[in-house]
Amino acid sequence: MITREHAYELLTKYNKTKSLITHGLAVEAVMRYFARKNNEDEDYWGAVGLLHDIDYELYPDEHCHKSKEILEKEGVDDDIIHAVISHGWNICIDVEPTRKMEKVLYAIDELTGLITAAVLMRPDKSILELEVKSVKKKFKSKSFAAGVDREVILAGCEMIDMDLDTVILWTIEGMKEAATELELAGI
Image 1 (cartoon, rainbow, N blue to C red):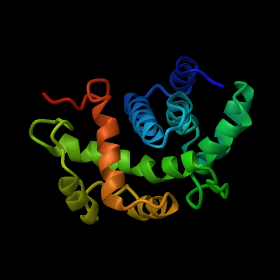
Image 2 (image 1 turned 45 degrees about the vertical axis):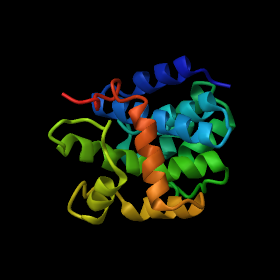
Image 3 (image 1 turned 60 degrees about the vertical axis):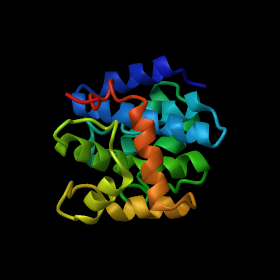
């Protein structure tokens, strides 16, 4: 089992860009929230959230492929490695998410980016009052945060058998818990 401190240390060892570190923290917060809602281990789910893009800054063209190599070298357990690389299923790797935690990661990874972009467009720059309907409106606008793959989010919702509104709500709620750290608590 990896500690939160060790996972964060690895994240910041391989990623120096503030936006990538902040994204890892956002995914961690949401994974912890989903773990709590599912009576699962928050620390374990959170560590996977922190580590999910460990290779992205150094190897963007080999994303998820290099994660395995990095995490093995760092002595990380195989189950965490599988979880980390499976979030790229049908995007950049053919490793399918099989466990609930992996499917949640698949569903919320892109969504955290969409929500962050939506918050940064708000005059108050705060997630604290963000509503699902506002995110849904941005979700439907293909030109908004165009790099966010809506089909991946929808496929993830289907995998975890949850409707989009609830996944958006839980993602917002998870991110709210880390709003200050994510710099989304307002100006």
